[in-house]
Length: 223
DNA sequence: CGGCGGGCAATG
DNA sequence: CATTGCCCGCCG
Image (cartoon, rainbow, N blue to C red):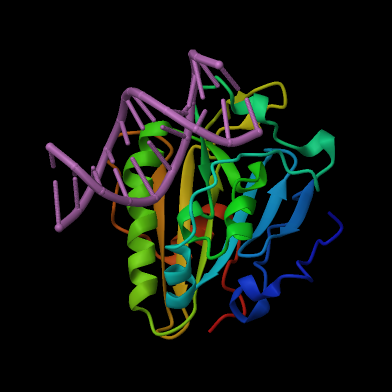
C-alpha cells in the first residue's frame, strides 16, 4: 500500500514512531489493522515485523473473542506480492501468526489477524510448543504491567539458503523474534528462536542484540 | 490426566 | 462454505 509510513495507525508503535529500517530494502508495504500494524515484504511474502500495543484491558477483552480460524490472502496487497493460501497448503509448515489470534480484543481484529500478511511459514512443533509459550508468557506480563506494552514480532532469514514454499515462493524463516518493550519500566527484551521444533533458548536477549542481528532499530526515539 | 492455544485436513 | 475430528506441546 502507499501507506508507507503507517500514517493511519501510529498508535501501534511506541511514541507513534515506526522502526528505522536498514537501507536498501525494497518491495515493502505498510498495512494497518485494527489491533496491529504489519510491514510486509513482497520479496519474502511475509512480514518484516508486526507491531502491537497491548494492555490489560485489551487482553481482558480478548478473552471473550472466539478464534475465527478463517485464513485469507491479503487483498490490499498487489496480487504479485501476496502470499496465497495455496502456498501454505501441503507445505509441511504451519501458518504462524505474528500478532497472535489470542491477543485480539474484538471480533474484527480477530478476523484480521488471519490475514496471510500476518503469517510466516512456521515449524508446526515450534508454533504449538515453545512459541506458544512465549506468546502466553507475553500476555501474562502485559496483564501485570502498569500500562501499555509494545511488542514487535517477526521472522529472520539468516540461513545460507532460504527455502521457499508454494508457487509464490513464500520464504521460510530461519528464526523468529518477539521484542517486548514496557515504557513504564523502560525495559525491553527479545525472544529469539530457531524456526524448528525441539528445545529452544528460553533466555531472552537484549534489544541491542536483536537490533544487531536484524539491522532494524525498533525503539529509536523510544524512552 | 484434561484444558488450552497453536495448528491441520477430510467431510458434506 | 462451515462443520467436524484430529495432532502438537505445555501446564496445572
